[in-house]
Image (cartoon, rainbow, N blue to C red; front, top):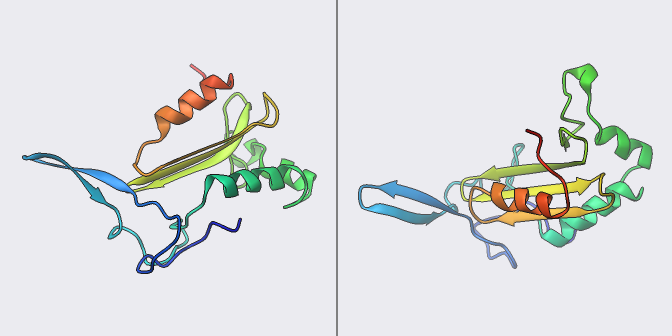
Length: 151
């Protein structure tokens, strides 16, 4: 993952997108960048950046035994009902129909989603947005590959 990391935002960072959030007032809606919302350089709840290519490589390395063994990948990416976690593994959300697993996150002006499909097998879908809501494109991507949301 050569293009991802926790960057110092008071420096020029190649290939780093700026997030935007809507700020409502009596005059209407204005877009504001999120630069003054961030911590200066990452933190325990996030604050790091990744590219689509790096997240795709991460997903492939997770599943092909490069990052961890395939047994460990299975342990990380399967539900833990015995821990009262029927839709979450160790760091990975699990689709209720078990069709995919992944992780998402967001902050003021940014959002991201990584889906790794089980059925159909082998798809990796990354959605990155420099606004706070990537839900519509994530749902559309899931629909296009045949993963439906449960009722």
